[in-house]
Image (cartoon, rainbow, N blue to C red; front, side, top):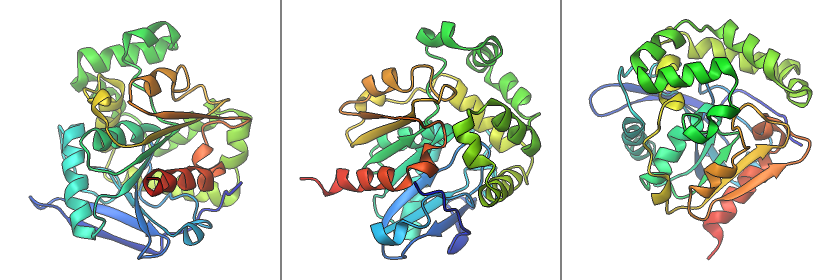
Length: 290
């Protein structure tokens, strides 16, 4: 089990067509296999994963701040398709070619949009936020979440206004109060807690609008052509994770052709950090296989 987190080894911004900036951070060898990282809710480019295994695997991990988070320029009204366009432009600017991708938590639907558009070669969804607006999940959601999902579907702008009331401290408190003990064992470790708190503070540095737009998109109907995905997709969930997907990715996997679902024993939502080497090795194997 690898829980090592460290500061990026390379960091910067790229100017996209149209003038917006996209913040990025990198770990691992500069000539490694590019793996683009779509981070979880309200976190910045600074919170990576698997820092102690990247050199051995030959992985160049590249994390990006979505628009309005961290140092990336805001893009009001943006869509999943807009994120795909940003990824394609960014990959060209950074010399990533058609990268592999990892999407964590709320970063998952953004990564799935990239897979559906063919912008990446393979994808690992880790503790991925599910499309909870699907009617089949209505009875499985807690009452407050069901209300917010209904609002995101019926009136996305109103939902954004609600989510704009969140803060870095509010996100920390929500995660720490709602996580199983196996995750708290990760999140409370001093090095991880410091990195996570920094990523939350940076994500809200421009205010909450970036997080609010992310969340309204993730909680509403995605409109992503999951059945059109033609690249390898692995879904990873901890067996004790009940917060990211009501059925731990069973239905989500069934909607993606050829998707492989992994249920990790005795793990929760922190699978990305507790099983980083396994996730990355499997992802690399998807493109190495004939």
